[in-house]
Image 1 (cartoon, rainbow, N blue to C red):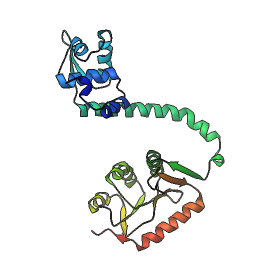
Image 2: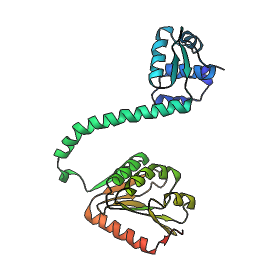
Image 3: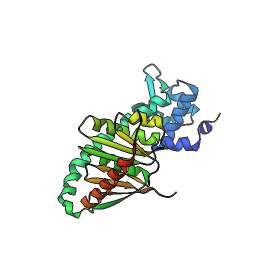
Image 4: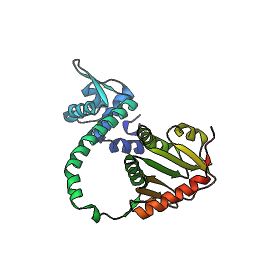
Length: 256
């Protein structure tokens, strides 16, 4: 089988997205399908320039996709895809932490010099990734009380927010979660130790209220772009909290 047909273009694009070049992809795929190889064998079988093959293999080793047996000649072994992906994740997260520290150290003082009065009271947040990021940022600032109203609760959301709930549970935060009765009960059982849960027959929209100071309302996209608004306006936050508490009083506690 030709090396170019071993995987789909979709998988190839994903490998590029996580940082592999086309040459590195070809080299890794050849070792994955053929087993351990010497540099010259990788070059020949994967149709890669011999003048570049050692640089390609050196980078693959540094990125955590292959291992090297220091023999004569050297033998190159592919790591399992799951191990390689995990190595990539750890490398990217470590790099991001370092970059985050450097960027915040220099940019945050510049932002803060503008004065808080220049920041608008209400932000429009567009797109699922931006909404999740802003939601987690809001959760991270909770110190006393957290109110969550989520009409639907899928496994993806649970995986995203559970680390934040665990962290907050270890502090003084009181967490209340209100969902509809359509939510899978097994999912609710998994997080019932992290938040007090109540159920309603139906809910129109959802949101997050943090410490009575911040509110994030999920507006949905009606089949289009996901949309939410975030605000720390005291009037809007109080209105959202009052409405949450009104719905909470009539909601049914999760049965033991």
